[in-house]
Length: 114
Image 1 (cartoon, helix red, strand yellow):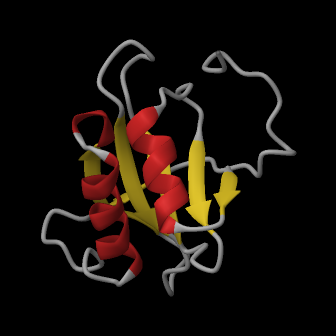
Image 2: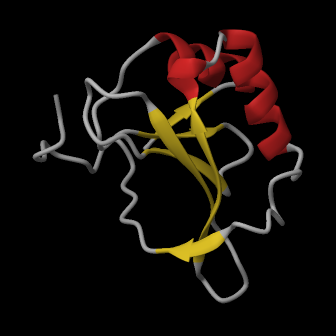
């Protein structure tokens, strides 16, 4: 998982680049929200699951799913800010998920790395 400095930086990265399938991001100061690459391949639309960490029982909840490859940078930033402002926390389609999240320095090469 990589940390970026701002919603603007994350929007640029997610809307203007293609990422390997094991990539995840968080925004500095908002580490309870994580954007996980949920695409089926690097050649497919870049779909990102938005998860929330730090729930009282230790669960991980997916609260949103966004296809950033269909967004321009401005729209991507709007989506990210909605999450950071807590507006996605109680989406009725949110669900508990299991995920393995590693800091970038711990992640070695895996079958999903490009």
